[in-house]
Structure formats: structure tokens, C-alpha cells
Length: 152
Image (tube, rainbow, N blue to C red):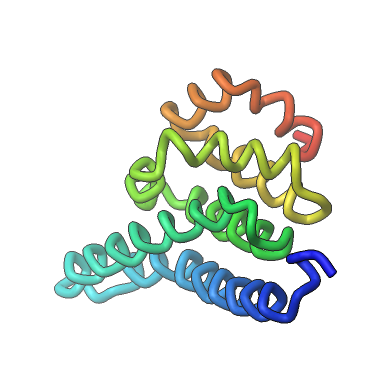
């Protein structure tokens, strides 16, 4: 039995998968929370959303870059990062993880299987809207990978 079949690996992978899904929910609601806040609470809500986004983005980037987690965990983390990239107000949180974020997502496109590959490509495509990420994608030949998974 190799490490990926051991009970402890399975338990850790399941825990990480659940945690990644929770972070994905935080990612998808952080910006909406700040946007929907009452006018007087908007600044406080925006700071809270930004703080949540900062912590979540770095955790998700760590999941994507780890070789010790399952494709499911990587796929969910990439999906959440792609959700982050939909909101211009959260790009600053994603920028804090650069320069490692794009190469990690591209590695997931190349080395992972199934939905993890596609979710990583989608995240890269959404990141391409922001100049620093587009430059990194060009530098690492990521545009070719995006087009192989995401048809325009």
C-alpha cells in the first residue's frame, strides 16, 4: 500500500477537501458581502472581505501548489481562485500570492487530471484580465494551456 492509499492520507485529503470547499464559499461571498453592506457599514464590510480574501487566497494557493493533496482538493482550490478572479476588488488579495500563483495553476493544468486541470485553466483565464497575471501567463506559456481547456 502506497502513501496515497493509507488511511491517514485519505483522512487528511478528506479534511483538506472539506476545508477547501469552505474556503471556496468564503471566496464567492466575500465580495458580495462587501457590496451588499449598508452604506455606513460598507467600509467595515470591505475591510472584512479583504481580510478574508487575503487569508483565503494564500491558503488556496498553497493547496494548488501542494503535491501532497488530491486532484479534488486542487480542483476545488483552483475553482475558488477562479471565483476570486471574477471580482476586481479582490485582485489585490490574489496579487499578494504572485509570483507563485500562475506557475502553480499552470502546473495543475499540466500535471493534474480531470476537473482539476479545467478549473486551473479557468482560474488562469479569469486572472488574465489583470495585467500582472497576463504578463506571468505569457512568460510561462500559459495562454496556450488556457486555450486547450477553455474555448473562447
